[in-house]
Figure 1 (tube, rainbow, N blue to C red):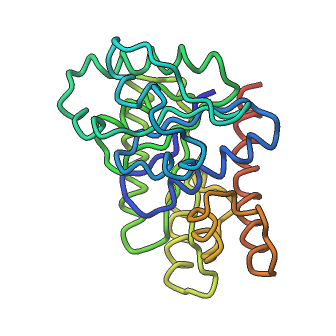
Figure 2: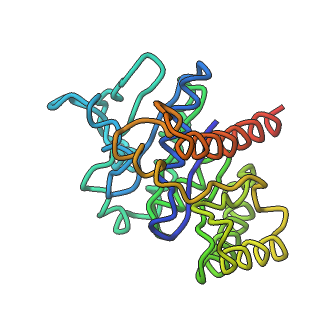
Figure 3: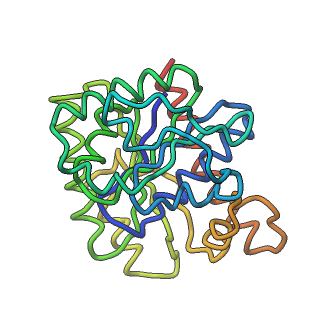
Length: 255
């Protein structure tokens, strides 16, 4: 299965969700491939300690062309990575046929894994479209702010276009509310508005606004690893509950 973590807005926790899904899948004994399509390379950076300098590997931009037979980097027995690279900044200039090449390449590679997680770029461009056209599922982290309703609606419209014209098998699992402060009336109003507008597309478990989430990403580990104090344990529980819901939903929809 191929799952894209996607939203055309930066700072929503897209990479945090992708990386923690990778950790959770590994713990469940799944063989996982992480594909970092974001030119910023934050998902790749998260595993920096495990990536050997000078290792000849396939990079994300290679998937848009038919050349190159370099190996995929194995980080652990259950995790491999196709890392971000500087050439991803140029893919918007690639011919439209490159999307089909990407789709064929990643689908072929996916046969060797239980799950492929794609961290997409935070723009509604070539890279994001290519990922959605190749994916079986997609999920979108959103922060409930003044712009999230418009962003969510435009993303859903784009996904419907791709489902209609290019990938009818793509299933949108929902909007994952992230950095949610239950004390904020403004955020509560935004979440309520999203539920009214797209109720079937809002995941029923939100990730709270916890410092521990960002701290864990900085240290290159899952949020629930070494959760020692009460606040960290609460953060770990909300993240793990949300991600378990996503994985269970994918499993249920593939039966």
